[in-house]
Amino acid sequence: MKENQTMVTEFILLGFCLGPRIHVILFALFSVCYIFTLLGNGFTLGLICLEPRLHSPMYFFLSNLATVDIAYACNTVPQTLVNLLDETKPISFAGCMMQTYLFLTFGSTECVLLVVMSYDRYVAICHPLHYTVIMNWRVCTIMAAVSWIFSFLLALVHLVLILRLPFCGPHEVNHFFCEILSVLKLACADTTLNQVVIFAACVFALVGPLCLVLVSYTRILVTILRIQSGEGRRKAFSTCSSHLCVVGLFFGSAIVMYIAPKSQHPEELQKILFLFYSFFNPMLNPLIYSLRNAEVKGALRRSLCNENHSQLV
Image (cartoon, rainbow, N blue to C red; front, side, top):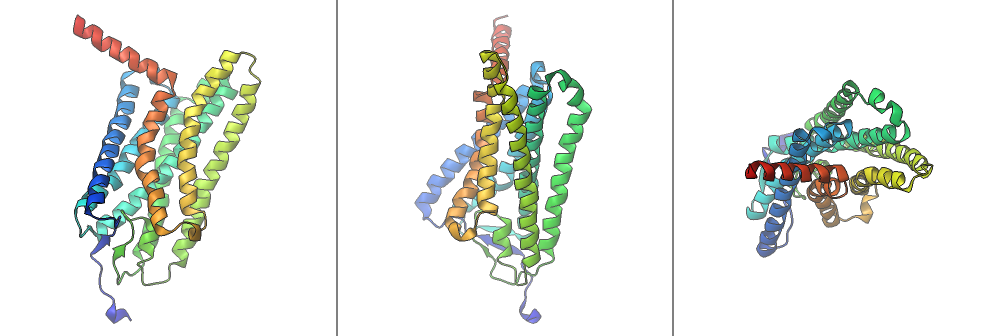
């Protein structure tokens, strides 16, 4: 058996088998989404950096989230766009492994950041008098650093377990990028350990964080309902609603993909779910935070007014 195994140097990404015309339409659609993702998240980063009133823990974590979304999109979208126009759809073995590693890293980072952001809102609403003490810049920096370091290390575990496997053909990945479960199907060895580690990581990095977010927002909701002022309740809800939208979109799609029974989701349907997860979530995040956040809209108005004033002067 070992004599028949050959070293795999590249994989073929099958992507969407829908015909050349549909591929051109998808190329145009994904290109627009990619541009909006880069512009939207880049705009969020720039506004947070330039506007002093947004130099707070909440927007510090939001800037990290925007960085993750940009990296997320840059990891998968360019290769997908190339594959839509290139019938061979090749990707090197090293490139495939790196894409898998980065996808897992950025996904885990976003999970942890959403938990940290929910904790930030919990402290701000439930313990407002102690907010500046609890969420000081040292604590915020440590939380952000732990989010990134934890994610890089967790993804490294998956990468090491994949690299120990032999790949002797076929080398066609039935996906539009090197998604870990699709890559594992090509291994000509037992992948039980990989599957167990993936499931454990999903429980630890998806279900666990989601439970923490729900606990935080349950306590936030109880505190908001105790607020006597209607204006106070409205302001508290508005600061949390955008974050809840992002949490629902991210965790909902991720849990369906990695924890729900696979028999209920054929491979083509899984590709559509990954499209939403990989393409549309990073694009929607800045829109949700910008359109539903009064402070961001206020900062934008001030920036535009200052720019117009400087032009007039």
